[in-house]
Length: 108
Image (cartoon, rainbow, N blue to C red; front, side):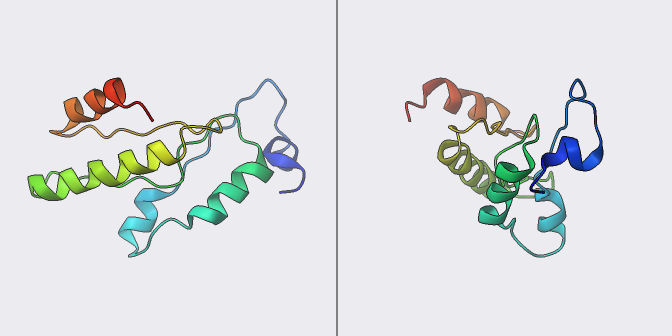
């Protein structure tokens, strides 16, 4: 990845490369996203767009408390990585208004 994703993939410069953080994969396979490794990969690969290193995905079968925990963990990661061109993440759920409200009122 020393050459960046555009060169590695042979993509012309006018093509935008979007990176996924793999959160759904890691959650469904019993692990967490390797945050430090992801941040290093982003630095070296130089994608055009990339989300925060890890988000926590609520599902409809979760209790409201479990979904709230996902919101708290995701918002913590959003705050930790709001600098450095990472794209924040919000999940469509019964707590969507809470996500939006947090962004509008957060001063960090």
